[in-house]
Amino acid sequence: MKLLATTFAVLTATAFASAAHAQQYQMPMYPQGYVGADAMFWDLNPDRGSSANSVGLRLNGGMKFNDYFAAEAHLGTGGSDGPIELDYLVGAYAKGILPLSQEFRLYGLAGFTEVDFDVDRESGFSYGAGAEFDVAPNLAIGADYMRYLDKSDYTFDAASVGVRFRF
Image (cartoon, rainbow, N blue to C red):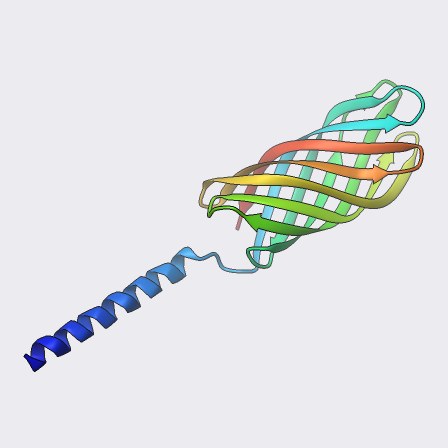
């Protein structure tokens, strides 16, 4: 009877240790880098006059430090609407993440962006929000909306849809 109790205790301890060991491999390792590419649908809205909008390309990359916080950078270019052309945008942001499930996350971004149009260059505070969904272990699709510039005489916004690869 004592041998049966000892055997049961050893098997139970082994099962718990194996489960904890398996769980450890499913948790992501931090820090975790990522890169992505997006179609960026931008819109320049002056207080007076007509707005300009077009489609460009946005590259992004960052470092996720835990399930709730990351640092991210954007580099965008392309697109023109009549006399206004987006030469580039470059920015750095803090990213707050709200995981709703293991595969789906909402996030908010806040930081600083410099935007260069062929007629003007401005920089300022930027903010936005988005969502990501994992389609494979290291691949996610996502969408976000950013207010890159909010100046006294115009705003510059962009909605983006694209993919992210985590490594």
